[in-house]
Image (cartoon, rainbow, N blue to C red; front, top):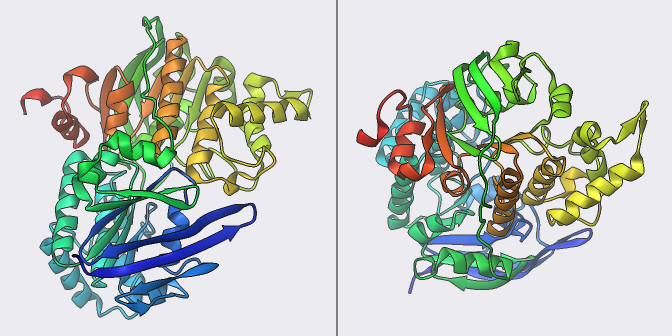
Length: 505
């Protein structure tokens, strides 16, 4: 029997209108890799925030190494050996690696000693890092290494990881897993949160499943299929997205020699992008985060302007047009950053429906808003995409990440776009919601729309797209039929194997 490291007993946390965690109990063993699974809004984030000292439980207790454990703040949790790698990086791009690591330490040593320690630890665990490189120049995978090394320097007993592979290539995922297995063998327990269930099966020793704040089951992942785990999470059978029979039509979007500078100092400029997108087609664009995905979406949405002829919609040049004129013509976009870019956090869902829907849904006339029609549009999105919220008057920030994602995607899909460009459509979304969003994309294409899906989820791109290309350092690889590609070939394309016959590398 594995010795228990952390025991969670009856943890409960309620917020106005919702019980986030309801009498949650389970144990994590020394050196165990333990998965925490659940739909969006199931209570995973609240639970790990209580373990890490960010949230105080209303009821229940925890014991760490058989001693009472109730951290009042993260500093206390870290002192007791709890470390956490968050889904969103908390790094300063203008500082170097060592300076960022020092900011996360209570009493950092002299910079030279810290740099030496970073090199030692990073090489020991197969995650080599140059402590003097500026973070803004690092890839997403390298930035995650900074976060992990910052945690490992604390010599943690429990490492909490939230969606750690969402920005990694397949090759980087395998390196990370080797590191986690090494940590586990040395006695470090890992609490692992991910919606990628095949990864859970490959890595984790045990899994606890949450649904609506309650523990509804547990399993040994390697002995459980991904579908069975997904159905335990949602409490019902899972539908697999199915493409409708469709024939490709005329070219809807034609990009020729698109080159634009990134508005961010640490962004990636686009370099001579060429692609065509036909009516009824789903084209997948893969790549590690930070290789020009945000810039590509901004250039297509109209947030970044280009030469008029660089982008053509149904044969008409639109590179010089802003977002609203492009929307009027039928080109819609949903960016990756849902809170702050795709949606205004403090505005209601009705107001957020108005922000992008006013043009195509006719929600304003002669300077006056049609509030009733706008509210009906928001309610239609909530119903069609099963957005879990009390109603359209709720603020965007009150929704879980996955439910806000469903609202953002639904808002664009229900506007009947001719071309839809979406970045990370199912990022941080549970299996059932992801399947629903992918089906909506396939149905949209089945109705004759052209869809460009930018995603770091390769399984997603292989499932819904007919052709695939990869972005690397702002350059687009050759476009290939997805049914001719292996995961290894895709990884090479994402890593920059442009202009070469990837299949024979």
